[in-house]
Image 1 (cartoon, rainbow, N blue to C red):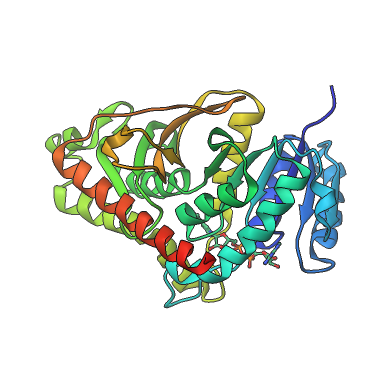
Image 2 (cartoon, rainbow, N blue to C red):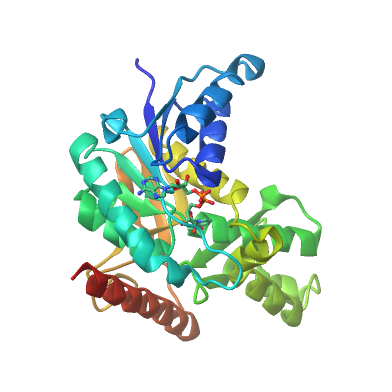
Length: 319
Ligand code: A3D
C-alpha cells in the first residue's frame, strides 16, 4: 500500500512544525509548499535528514509550484500572515483572503478529493473562503481551532488540579476568537464535571472564571510573549491530531470549525463555526449536537454572529 501524501500549504512556523510531527508519527510523505523560494525545500531537506536519526520512514520535498500537491490525501493550510502584538485575528481578513483565493485554486486543480484542514486566521472566515474557492465538499474541509483552544483550557485545568493531562477533557465551542465558548459543564476530570469539582472544593468558581478567560486570551498571551509572531507548537500538534483522525479512520470526537446548517445548534442559516464532530475516513462524518442551556446558547449565538459579521466583510472585499 502506497504511503499517504500530505501537502502543507505554508511552510512557516506552523508548517515546519507540522512537517516534523507528521514524520515522527509516520503519517505519510510530506510535500511542503510556500511562495517563499527555498524555504519549503530547505525545511523539507532538513527534516528529511533527521529521519535516519529518528528511525522513521517519510519522504520530504519542497515546492513553489502547486503541481507538487497533486493527488494529496490531506492538505493542511497555514499560508498567510500571523498577527503581531496589538493586532486582532480579524485584522488579517483582507490579506489572508487573497491567500485563500490562490490556495483554493491550487487545491481545486490538483487535489479536489483531499481532506483539507485550514489553520490560517481569522479561522472560521478563512475556512468559509477556502471552501468557496476550492469547491471541496463541506464534509471534507475543517478549521483547526477547537482542538487548540480545548488543549489550552485543559493545560490550565491540569495545573489548577495537579492531575495528569490524560485525565482532563474539555470542550470549547464557537468561533476562534474573543467570543469562543469554553463549556464548563462538559469539561471534566476523569468524567467529573467542573461544576462538581467546585462543589468538592477542588477549585473555586472565581478561579474557574479566570481559567476560562485565560483560555479565551490564550493566543494573545503567546503573541505578547513572542512579539514577532503567534503560537505554533500547540497549533501544529492540534492540526496533526485532526489529520491522523482522518488518515487512520479513528472516528475521533473533536471540536472543529465545520459547516453548521439546517437549524443545527439553533442556527438560522449556514455558518462555519466550531462544534464537536466525528472525524474518520469520510472527513466530518457527523456533527455532535449537545444540549446547551440558555446562557450557553446565547454565547454560542453571539460567537456565530461574530463569524457571520466577518464573512460579510470578506464578501464585501471579494466584490
Ligand atoms: P508564518 O510563520 O508567517 O508562516 C506563514 C507562511 O505562509 C510563510 O512561510 C509565508 O511565506 C507563507 N505564505 C504567505 N502567503 C502565501 C501564499 N499566497 N501561498 C503560500 N504560502 C504563503 O505563520 P505561522 O505559521 O505562525 O501561522 C500561519 C497562520 O496560522 C497565520 O494566519 C496565523 O494567524 C494562523 N494561526 C492560527 C491558529 C489557530 O488556532 C486557528 C493558531 C496560530 C496561528
